[in-house]
Each structure stands twice: as C-alpha cells, then as structure tokens.
Length: 163
Image 1 (cartoon, rainbow, N blue to C red):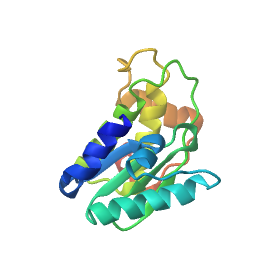
Image 2 (cartoon, rainbow, N blue to C red):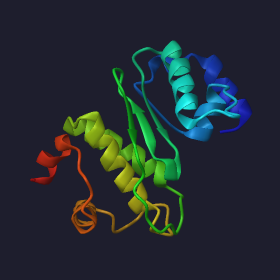
Image 3 (tube, rainbow, N blue to C red):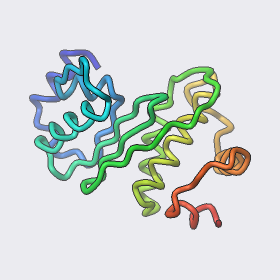
C-alpha cells in the first residue's frame, strides 16, 4: 500500500465493516500512522490494536512480522505466535498463505492459538518455494513437518491432527 492508499482506507469508513484485518507490521504501522522509533514490536502492536479497535471494536486483526512471528487479536485476547524457521526461497505469497490458513481455521472452528500456529507454519512453508503459490504445500506436508521437527503443538490443534 502507498501512503495515499492508506489515507483512502482511513477516510473511507470501510474498516467499520471489516471482520478480519490482516496486514504485515509495516503496513499496519502505516495505516495506523504510528512511528515505531525506539519502541518494542509489542508496544507498536498494542498501539496498532488500540487504533484498530477505535475504528471497529468487533474487528479481529492479524499482524505478521516475518521472523518475529505474528500477532492475532481475536476480540478478547492477543496471541503472539513465534515464527517457525525455514530456508527462504521467496517471501512472495507468504502473507496470503498466512491469511488463507487463518480463514480456513476459523471456518473449521479452531481456537485462535491453534489457527495462529498453523498459519505461521503454512506461511513458513510457503517461503520455501520460489513461486508465489507453493504447489506441493498440502496437509500431508504440514503434518510431516510437525512430526519431523517435533514442533510443540497447541493443545487445541491436536484433535485436528488426530493426536
């Protein structure tokens, strides 16, 4: 987004109709007009959330921050989920993969911490491909990575994986 586009979004009133706003940390600070100099990421995220809740108190927010992980505000709590390191071929499409996974997890009724964990894992796997869409990323690949790496799973994710 350009500065002008962010201004259009701010003035449009559209955020009052948004259920889930998904941005990366840079986009979110630009939209909320926050200058993050000498502040921790957590402080900046809290400022972004305060701004977002003032726009629409019912809006969930997802803020991704690459290697730092992601934050998910579900309307009642803030969930910080660390990233899962992978060798990167291209970051193109990682944010889209993250959002798609959050939406699919919500449709399945997953708890926010499970959805955020899975979204970070899928986004991490997506960067291993040089293509915008990782053509071989599927549920089997996700499950294999979880088992191979012995990743600590949120308890609420276990039923979806059959463990």
